[in-house]
Length: 220
Image (cartoon, rainbow, N blue to C red; front, side, top):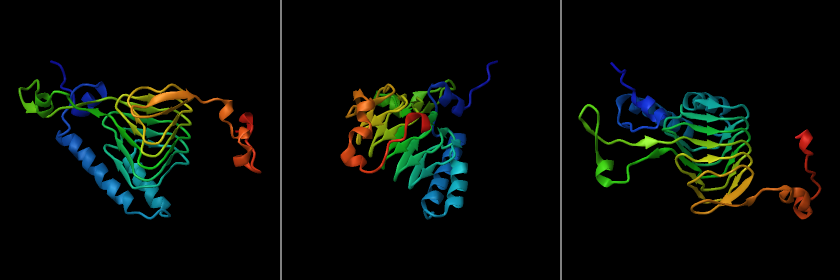
């Protein structure tokens, strides 16, 4: 006899699951309450903030900072690399896995979503389970953001999207499809504008660089 899958296992398998499942609701309730705890801290309460984040996020690399307020859905389905900066109002609806690489910077009001609901209204309202019960079901697709990415203010990343390393996503973009590495992409829906090249170096902007210097790549 086949072992019945838990709803969280169904999420990771990419098949329909019931978000109202008691075990899932318990995970979300704990995380949502911890979000409130984090959002009530002062910015200089670093130890308290770190302790709360350790209870929310599945993995949070060294050197990270999240301004707050935050809104994680499950939290434990999110992995964030080293030296992350998240500005005001970071929202991560991590039903499926969310993976963020090293050295990423997110502007204010960045949102990552992974769940997808059926397009047909009647199916969105209820689907018949294997046990013959009518339930409201959805499914989810993982999101991955590579290393060294900068997401501008108000960027939304949709389910199933992968953003490659070294990308810049313009403010207000809605990312509905994969973005290749070393790209500047923007728009609704977000599209690649061009490749990021050495021509973008601050070396070529002396009026902005002023008396500062670009660090040679081998010493970075």
